[in-house]
Length: 336
Image (cartoon, rainbow, N blue to C red):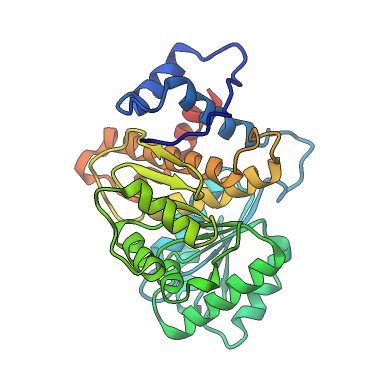
């Protein structure tokens, strides 16, 4: 049974256009426990938190996002997360990476602000100095499992918690959390984005039992509750999203192509949407957990990008092709 809060109400005013209904029906008609109206309500909450574009704003007002990750072996992941944040609508995107990764990441795009500090002795302090200027941080893309880098990531998580900043944890950031769950346990502004293997590792670390493959929803609820009702996005054929109280299912149509980098696009997008939803407040999310709303939006957007890119490139599709679809996918889902 899919649990969706019954307090979600119809917010679309005059209703949806025929094109909009086709998007909703294609995405969710396979799940009879979700009504089309409920799905439109969730989409409308996402649309509610998106800040309007106006000439009265200054640079940085719509989001300054920090990506913590990037080492010699992994330079693509932080790039995909950071550029996706910009494409979704953040004004500035910072990457905090190791020295030998910085030049490579800079060469991918002049749009990114790259800090080669993650392997320096003063890495935590260097990043901490930037935290007052950031609205959210995404920790893990391209981080690797070097002990020094993991220790620095730990320190950055702790400093971010003190500042009350929303934290998205992905990839090797989740490896760190599985080793030290108390690092994030009970921090309500954290969002974890595990794939199947990462979820299993986290579940066994917290519950001391293997995942029950016949009860994915129950396992997700239990893991979230054990971590202090953190928002968790369990990525898969369908994305399951929970804060320990309810489970949302995002089965928006994507494709069968599973190229690397898609999770990084999701985490970067989520970093922006988490900031927007948190800033918007309960009146814009109809009292719903803002991070559930943000996660649902990011999952839908990533899947729409995947679908559009696959329609063009088929088996040869890569994450770079998906990045190019962010603008049109965002418009189709949230601004049509």
